[in-house]
Image (cartoon, rainbow, N blue to C red; front, side, top):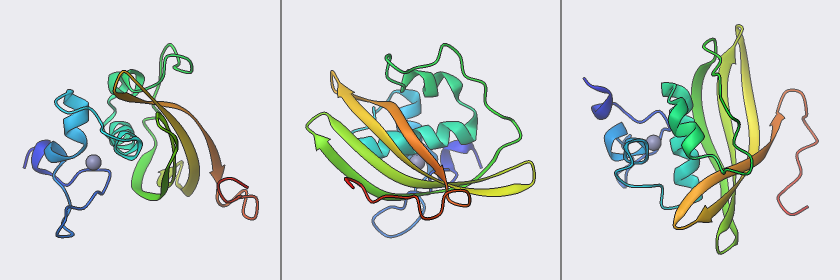
Length: 147
Ligand SMILES: [Zn+2]
């Protein structure tokens, strides 16, 4: 089974509740065939790029104002899953997505809650920045959006 036919790392389901194939999900954005139509799709494609080690895509989808010059992925991180909590537009070309990413690093399982900000320029969505909060370390400090 090629990567294209496998279930997408982002875990998105189709209308029938089945896992979407990578080629019909984040693969569309990674190849440039179909740029992410919204911030949630962009976030999913970036999560999948982390899983697949696609550094060029991570840099390409990063807004120029906050994009690092280079990016080194920690090969020891094992990604376990993505859960979208909330996706909201904050203006016509800005959006926030709140999500939980689960991963294992140095034998330790981590659930990371993050709120990421996105901006759309010339029809393309870009990741701007985000506030990451480890749920283990910061329980009780998670404020609802807008609070
Ligand atoms: Zn996907």
